[in-house]
Image (cartoon, rainbow, N blue to C red; front, side, top):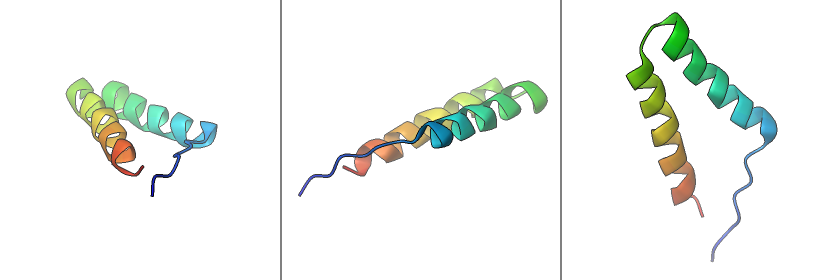
Length: 47
């Protein structure tokens, strides 16, 4: 059985804020990119 995954706007904003913090405050843009890529991969496996 396949399900549709809906990402709420709040969840999407939270991920963007986390990535921005990692990139601009912690000065680690590679980790920020990795976080977003890994989250997207994991979300895509849910369906």
